[in-house]
Image (cartoon, rainbow, N blue to C red; front, side, top):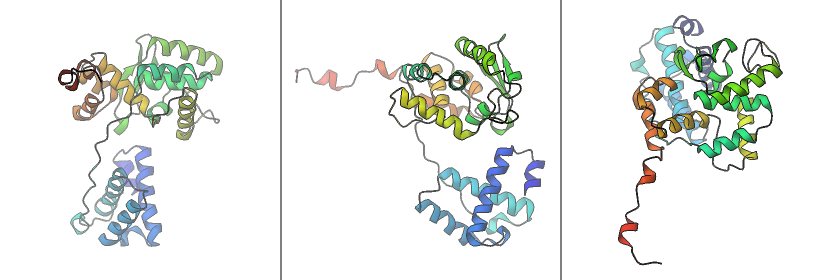
Length: 274
């Protein structure tokens, strides 16, 4: 299964997640995964959902992994398993205001942490894109970041703001990274995902932001603020690295630039002061 995914040029992250999904269900039943039945798979999924440890994305990830195993590796018919994918909830992203983003950055005194927040928000990066970012992919002369390790191995260019460049110059002068822009304790490896989440949570606490936020909110905020500034949705799609415009259009539901102009009908109906 590992070989099959490597040949098909799956990203290391996807390979790791798919193998882990199959490994967990195999360990649960204490049998090799090729012996799994449809009922066992469905019972496992149902139990994990009821335990609150399985989202729709987790269900679909397991199904995708099992399909590679059964169809491409074991040469079995998927019709014999035939498990439908879970319907994903259409959630509205959590977005910070520009004032909240400014507070997050200003209250962060650690220069490396400040640079992490600035780069992520400035370019609308996913977490793993930030962690795998290399110094050679920054183009300050063009004010762009070349993201080579995007989702689905799709490369793209995004924005590198003036303020971000200033912070990065200070950061580079002090820390002198060699390859990865934000290396971990071992300089040949990037920071861990947990580290950047902790950095973000600490910044939220210091900025007294109590809304339910997470690191990916910086990316959501980037797209929403561009939309509120009047940026074309197609351009935002390219900057975000979305496969379809439909994915980008979710930010139409959270932007408030037009909503602010709309008055509630009660202001037209109720004329007497309370």
